[in-house]
Length: 197
Ligand SMILES: Nc1nc2c(c(=O)[nH]1)N[C@H]1C(S)=C(S)[C@@H](COP(=O)(O)O)O[C@H]1N2
Ligand SMILES: [Mo]
Image (cartoon, rainbow, N blue to C red):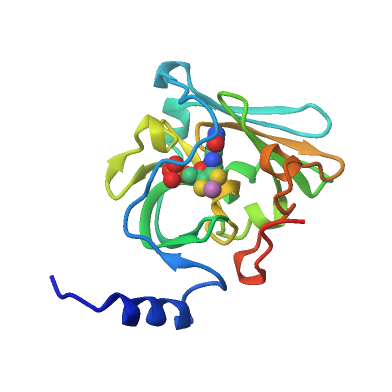
């Protein structure tokens, strides 16, 4: 391992064009949760999309696994200032899950097992930008990191990436989720440094 003087390291990190403003690189993926870790057995797991007209689209674990899987390598950025580069996830694109869903709205609330919520626009969930991931770095997601499956929306701050995701509720208007109610930004674009409102 090559040792880099920490002064140089921090200067390089701050100047990196790869990092959004105010972020610095971390090499580990610490657990960051606001409540207890829910334990969900795969046989009890489902992913649900409920439209604003209360049409439900459901996938159980086997149906979800049978969907086309993608491997993506992305940088992730926490709203508290950490970034982790080149994390590798496996999961199903939201484009696949939203494919057969008829809706006239643009707004969604992600709901997690355990009660966490976070709001997202469908524009941020579509277009190859968001996945329901069940593996990271070739390993099944552990419960503390959101297993059996979590949302991954790497172009937004990581609080939008709901762990233990249960479903999406499509809403006629934008509404704040858990952290957004507590002052976090409604969209959370790290490149615009949208941390708080
Ligand atoms: N269900 C749920 N999802 C969540 C959270 C949470 O408390 N509950 N915390 C969010 C925040 S603030 C961050 S930074 C990431 C942390 O993910 P990690 O624990 O895998 O590092 O999960 C996000 N998703
Ligand atoms: Mo966070």
